Length: 330
Picture 1 (tube, rainbow, N blue to C red):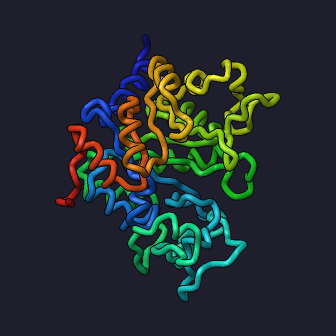
Picture 2: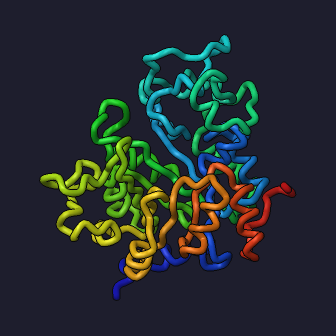
């Protein structure tokens, strides 16, 4: 085996350290979305203070090619206020249409109180003056609070059906990889996506960084499109029907290190198949404590949650090792 073949394997094993050392990967979704503003510095600080092994976050690219942390390619009218404190109306601008300096003028610290989104997260404590952070700022905060022990699961927010909302896939991934290298977190980073074209690019340019394959087969998102002619536009030319309809086999064929399914779609048979293929299975996004317990008992390798405090409580009840709170948090 050559050196170039060995290094990606070693890196993947190193990235698996949270699951190996603690037996489980506790990921804070968009920081701690159920408790603090999502994808914000206060939100990530909240997750770190609670204690997580991994921060899950989303990235976009601004008009001046800065990597920022945001879930939506367009500013959300449920989450974003202008400089005068007014909620944005539709249509909202896309992040790739705005330079970073202009993006800084918006406030993401609260949820619009009359929105459906607010009803979903009644426990979230908002604040004013919260700005969309750059990825570098989130990493700096995490390194300062977490002492270099916390991992990053970074999602590329790309859609093959909406190419005008983002940079082209190759440019997007190249800028993200450059930021990861510059901030020196490659050994503690993974890149995930529903759009597998970006993961194929990561594997080609940075085989040392594990790729995480997000899947959903729902009315609101189906990136696999089983039973339809030809491959899904989301799966980088691979067709699930060529793999017997097996999602784990499809992810393995794509070169994935981790399969990250919507938690309602996972059963024990699929989990055993995936783990038998050498894949870690980390489910998204689980917020009910009884469901967390059920999935832990099923044997998943990790859970992404909006409420890392709830997941910690479930883990503690089961006597599982817990990641330490950062910076003296409780």
